[in-house]
Image (cartoon, rainbow, N blue to C red):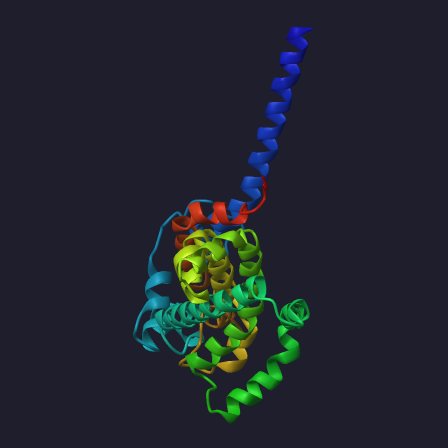
Length: 297
C-alpha cells in the first residue's frame, strides 16, 4: 500500500514537471528562435531545413539595422536599409523618451486622482470613477481620428509630444483604478493619525501612504510602460519619420520585396531588452504588488 502511494506521488510529480517543461518550452521557444535568427545569414534563414544553431554566425543584421549610415551600406551588403529611413537607434530612443515621460506623468497624476477617489468624500465620486474607467474601454481605432485631427491642428504630428499625450490619455484611467485599489487596502486610520500630527492631505500622502504604495506604483508603472512601449496604432498614425517608435520601425521590414527576417529579428531582440530589464529589476516589487491585499486579517 505504501509502495503504491509512493509510486502514485512520483508519477503525479513527473506529470506535473512534464507539463511545466512543455509550457515553459512553448513560451521560450519563440524567444530562442528570434535570438538565433538574428545571428543567421539570409540564405540560412530561408533554407528548407531549419537549423537551431547558426552554422556561420554573423552580426551584420545588428550592424545594418543600427548603423548611422543610410543607403549604400545596406544595399551593398544585402541588408534591408531601404526599409528604414533612419537608424534603428532613433526608434529605440523615441520609444524610451515617449514611454518614460508618459508613464511618469500617468503615475504622478493617477496618484493624486486615486487618493481623491479613495479618501475624499464628494457627490458622484463612484460614478465619476466609473466614467473615468469607461473611457479606457473605447478601442483605440474609435478615437484615433479625432486625436489625429487635434494633433494636426496643433502641428504636433510627427513629434514625441503627440505620442506622450496620446499614451497619457490611455494610461491614466487604468493607472487611476489600479492605484485606487491599492489605496483602499491601506487603513484610513493611518491618514487620520497623520492629520492629527499636523499633516495635510499631501503630507499624509507623501509621508505615510507613498512608502506603503511602492509595490503598487511599480506594478502600475510596469503595465503602463509595456503598453506604451508596444503600442502601434497611435505611433503609426501620429508619426512620419523623426518621431517613429520601435514598433513602427520594426513593421517596416515587411515590404514589397519580402520579409527581412534577419534584421527584423535583430531589431526585435534589442527592442525587447528595456521591458525585460525593467521586469527583472522590479521583480521583487512586482510579486508584492500583484499579491497586495490578497490576504486580509
